Length: 436
Image (cartoon, rainbow, N blue to C red; front, side, top):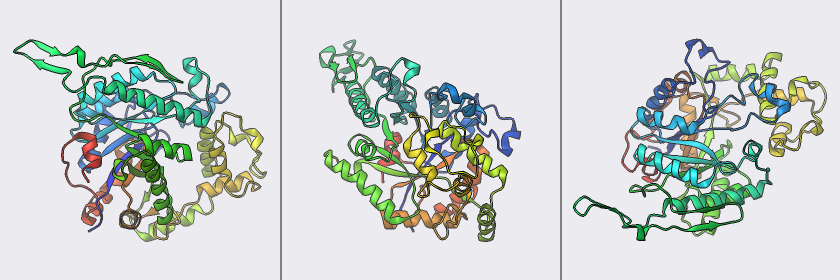
């Protein structure tokens, strides 16, 4: 039996057009209505998953690239995931729901009150996926800030949000029908916060928590992002390298940051986001990988559209047989994303860069993520036993067709291996994540 792991789902398109550009678009599901998502989260709960993290991007990007972002629905439209959360809670009993919130544009008092409300409504199953994106600042009349300053601001943001959550001291809520006393105002902290980035007054106009505060999730693999995770987060999201030593080293950086902040290693869960391509047999996996070695022009265009959206730069109009000139990218574009596309061969023609992204590898030899459910379970066990990993988030559309391509074969295998829970304890989302 393997080491029990935490499993979740990363709703990677966000609250947007699920299934667009896929065959299952023919099911005619209405992505703007809650039924599709309620169906999906019920299946995830039956599978024993701990949480769903809902990606979000407030902005459609800069004005010059609006068509690029919406052309294939890669960058939008997206509706507010916070407002979808109550429908998902109503459809489930144990699954945690974690919408994305931007610390750069959401006032901390408003966020604290919304989160407190959803924590109570859900029975302690709410979480915040806190991002520091600065590209949306202009939509709320703010100026963007530098990368590390955005993390400084996020630290102040979550610190004051937590102070608001705890502005009702123990004993402030009386709720005594005999005396008629509901609350004791002398035990409520009407603090004033005047920080570098935020100025606000407490207390929070919401009840304190009986079952613990909402779970804080954070992405970001930069040194500053890892330091934030270690000092503030309950869960750190990471992209999964296919190498045990790299997984172990990544976890060590997060846990070292936690120790430096006076926290224990068990205060933080590190979950790796993966998008396996599960197939029925090893022979089918070999066929899929071999076919990807010589991508068609149509596949290259699809890859170019995906990266164009991420880079807010139209790669489809650039010559495929010339090297990619970094001057085509504006200052607003993430240098890390540019480097991820160019890799270690910046002088390679764009065709080769796109072809490299289109090529797939086998789970069996850790060259990629194409394989059988048994082979993916091997990876899960290897990470858990040899790297001390906490768990995984599968990634994709939150659509029943996508989920069942993952779950139908994978759940029985993972349960048989002893790495996927078969039932829930108590304590809401925090209980899901920290009961083992």
